[in-house]
Amino acid sequence: KIVKEGSILYDVRRLSTPSEAAGLGKRFLEDLDREQVIVCCLDNKNQPVSINVVSVGTLNSSLVHPREVFKTAILSNAASIILFHNHPSGDPEPSQEDINITTRIKDAGLILGIELLDHIIIGSEELFCSLKERNLI
Image 1 (tube, rainbow, N blue to C red):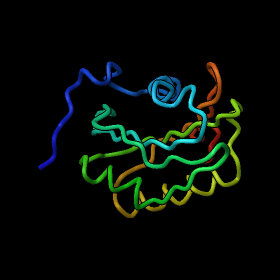
Image 2: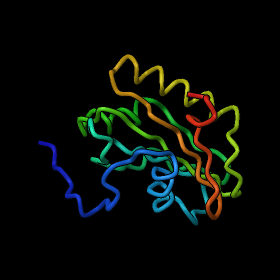
Image 3: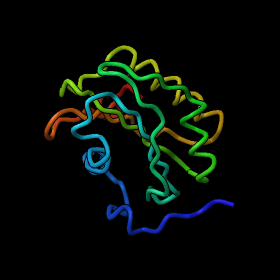
Image 4: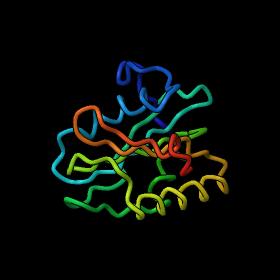
């Protein structure tokens, strides 16, 4: 049986823009000393239904596999997902590896019917990079 979390956990009730999504992701990823990848599972109205850590990496890398990303999404009955990860260096510029894993996750989501809405990289302070805004998704 799936346990549904209450709305009190996420005061942001609907994610409409990359900056709103980045604000939510930043709460979980700011000030970490190594890379972490989290997935935010959304319902049909782009409301968060769950947020889970997918991977904890090292200072400059994190191993991510679509299987772990979509396990959470499937168990949460998600209609779509937003992927977040941080760059402890503070520079949110995506690496080629970031772009490659985004493409893999997007393709896996198409097969499963769970859309990857965005992959947001959190940097220092207010810096973030939306791969959707850069047309990399």
